[in-house]
Amino acid sequence: MNFANYVEFQAADRPAELAITDPKREMSYGELDAETSAVANGLAGLGVEPGDRIALFLPNLTTFLTSYLGAMKLGAIPVPINLRFGQSEIAHVVTDADPEAIVVLGEAAPAFAEKPLDAELVVVGDDVPEGTTPYGGLVADAAKEFEIEPRLDSEVAEILYTSGTTGRPKGVQHTHGNLAANARGGRALMEYGPDTSFLTVAPCFHASGLNATTTPSLVHGAQNHFLPEWDPELALRTMADRDVTYTMLIPTMVLDLLEHGTEGYDLSAFESLNVGGSPMPAERIEEAEAALGCDLYEGYGMTETTLGAAGNTPGQDVYKAGSIGTVAEEWAEVRIEDPETGGEVPQGEKGELLWHGDVVMKGYWNLPEKNDEVFLEREGTEWLRSGDVGHVDADGHLFLDDRIDDMFISGGENVYPREIEDVIYELDGVQEAAVVGTPHERLGQQVTAIVRGDVTADEVQDVCRGALADYKVPREVHVRDEPLPQTATMKLDKVALRDEYGE
Image 1 (cartoon, rainbow, N blue to C red):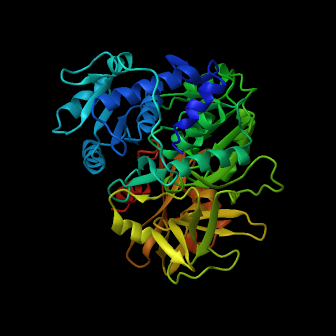
Image 2: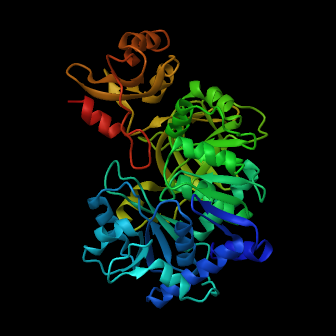
């Protein structure tokens, strides 16, 4: 089934109910259905056909969702582009995806109009360059009804590009079935439904914004409140004004909220905060729950699993500090294996997490060789390699130990940075911490810690000596005032840190 059918279902059942807002606009489900149909008709008038790609260079605005769903109704494939990409990365995505049309904000239109693109440019806003199509005119002139193009669950619904920190961005293909399974499973685990008020501040060019809140809200007829950029004050004000009950944030956003302070904001409606994208510092979880008046649930997922594959959930019997919860068995299975031998590791031992199930991507767009690398067959079942190192305990709780790419060898010993970072976060005054391997003449790689906060290098080394084996204690500690670098998806950029401190 075409995933865009869900907005049609909601419009039939609850046409006047609020569906989506941004700081300047709000739309009911009836209005959302009508405008997305107009977009579908307008794109068809530009020559777009089922299976074509439609690039979206838009922040979290109502026009992002109408363009996304309008393309999908037509049977085309929306391709959100990361707004933080540089020109070379944007050029790579546009060349790789080869879209028939690009929907873009007016201020960004000149950059696309100057390129020799074989694509129609649809411009949102008042500043519309000559030779392009104004979004407003496209919608105003088009019929508000559209017969949705049938799609199979196995057909591609969207393509999301990875952040490209270890190479060129890769296009992750999610099917209509992936999106539906992710949304239905999210309700089963997190207990949200028509009464939920979502906040979507994680960008919709990333799975954490698109598939943690936005696509599930459509399936369940909930409210969804977009913020076009990350602003802790605006986020807290919106949570209070819109009675937000649920959101998904990455750890750096949570830490920003704590640094800003939550006093003076009525967050009494707020119930659940899901944290993912990278590990949440264990020492800050209780602080965040107290400040926001909610339950914080760490989870795990990746773009390649549509979003969620494991998580802590309301009502589970046992919560364990540092655990990413249990496998979301309704739509995923995990295998933990030795990346060198391919054999499953015993319970409690570390290995690479491999995933199978309804939310696993169809594959990377235009990268058959890469697909051969990440999909492995084990006893007749196809598994997706995650690149993440983890282990499972006797109760079935998963623990994420690190990324294979972040692990390094120092003096012959495997070092997992997250273990050291968790210890550093025990120090009062630490705002951010990262551990990387840097060159060392005798050890090959040494443990180097980079910390932002009101601490000293001696304090960092002392707390590590009291908790860790000697080879894990940082030999170098750099304390800095400026924030640690982030990737285009607001995760800590350890590649940049290794470059900066490895010289």
